[in-house]
Amino acid sequence: ERELQAVRMAAAIEKMVDGRDLPVVLAGDFDARPESASLRFWTGRQSLEGTSVSYQDTWELANPGDPGHTFTIENPLTVVEDDWSRIPPRRIDYVLVRCDDRGPRLRIDSCGRLFDRPVDGDWASDHYGVTADLAFLDYPQ
Image 1 (cartoon, rainbow, N blue to C red):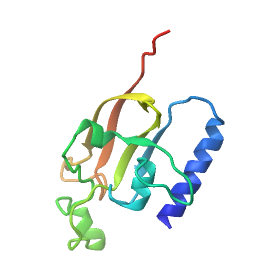
Image 2 (image 1 turned 90 degrees about the vertical axis):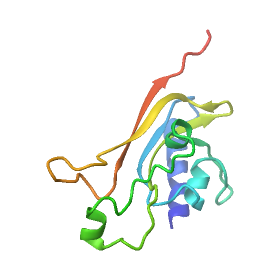
Image 3 (image 1 turned 135 degrees about the horizontal axis):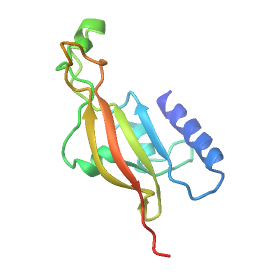
């Protein structure tokens, strides 16, 4: 199902940009690990349904080798709400930047987690958030 959703969403995005050379940021809870077919599709490593796209995973570029787990039992809400204690830590939340044939359409300055610790004993969510500092590229005129 996630694969079909990814293909449909990619088609919807392409329809919205209508062939224009626009930067696109896709962010959210994908509920899929980086090695899953749907994330491999988004990052240009696998086609699905005869379609391919290319988005840069901002975490992967900014934090090479760091798994960047956003869902882990270190966050007690994962155990309290639905008891995910048998599930190993994983990254399932992303900020992706659309690429052209030369790479990302935006400069990726940094990417990190947020809401990854309690404030006054309260956790914001059972997932950690992902934030990315992005900037427009300077193109030679």
